[in-house]
Image (cartoon, rainbow, N blue to C red; front, side):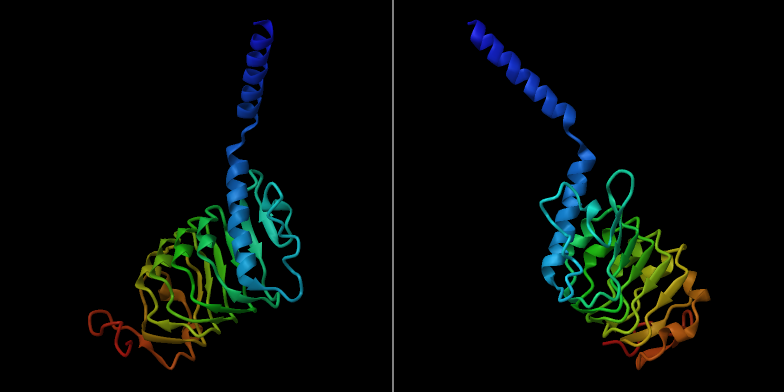
Length: 220
């Protein structure tokens, strides 16, 4: 009986120790690591830029080109001009504390995931100078902290989402050198975006005249 009681006591102490050591932020950080590792698996990396992205580590905060805050949440991914090719992944939308997603000047193909609209803390989305196709997701209008949106020099099609006009923090929009269509928005932050940030989109017409033309003109 004494041995059984000692065993139960030892088991109880072990359970309490596990509960006390459980850290919710560590679990979150690990799920963020899973999301980033999913991105790594979708990319071809001839220069081994992502070599340090080891999924067996507790969190991704020690990985090169990844920055975390004091709570070990990923806030920056800096992979611009890294000779990467491949596709973006839906799991990027799980990085809810991400503020900067820098993937410019690579050879990334495919579409921009709709799930990027879940990155509510995002300040800068730089995907310019890639080979992205498809439309600019309407969901990006949910990024109410966004300041910089640079999607220029890709092969994007479709209209400029009017949802972007509702982002009051937006200061820079560049979608030049794509194949966008319709008209250029003029409301909200678009009042102050220079027209050369929309140039070299052969099917994109000039600034829309409010009430006189549908912005989907010439956009099929």
